[in-house]
Image (cartoon, rainbow, N blue to C red):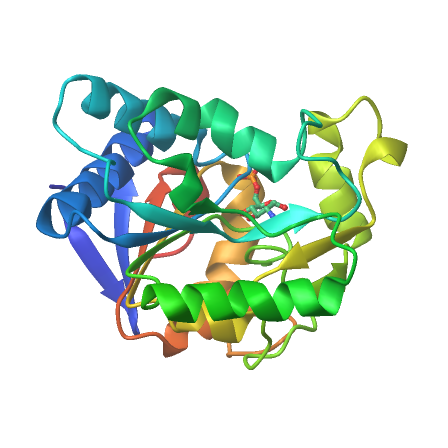
Length: 251
Ligand code: GLP
């Protein structure tokens, strides 16, 4: 395992490149599953975790990690996208992980982006997490504006699963996954910061220079709603695994 540093309350591993970030993250997840085969994972989407999911698929095929008893809850979902839409987060999770490992899909949860009653659906998602016993290990990425899940700047530390408006920055950042910017949904359902902070352990992955500013403000700045990831400083077991590019000027 690579050297772990600490800034304030946040533990940090700096990797040579994004491949090493993916491997390091996958090793931590595999170990956690090994220690507790019935672990409840919190999972994330976006470009960053794809490499780690590939590593976990490889480890599953090599019988190094067994997902048969694992349950998972995803952080967020776009509002209005059908689960079969190629950019829905349910589709993403099936495509990038669940279809390729021995997880029971009935034990995988992603917020509903097209519920008949969104408030009820958000409450029920929170209820399911609680009923499962809470999240044991939560994976996170970070937006270039410091968002976690879809908790955009302005989200308080107490927020729970709810419907949110996406910011211009996020819509622009995520346009690369869609035909064009106009196709990106304007709203999402996301676990709140309060929900995320209840996970027993948190691992955040970040790569590339686009994340430098958000990381600096999250790790070294004040805990403020303007930088939602800064509230991770309040968690007692939070590890950031980042590459050299993303760590510029941090230490
Ligand atoms: C998305 C997701 C976040 C993710 C972030 C970063 O908007 N809702 O959960 O962490 O953007 O994405 P990427 O890894 O593609 O930079």
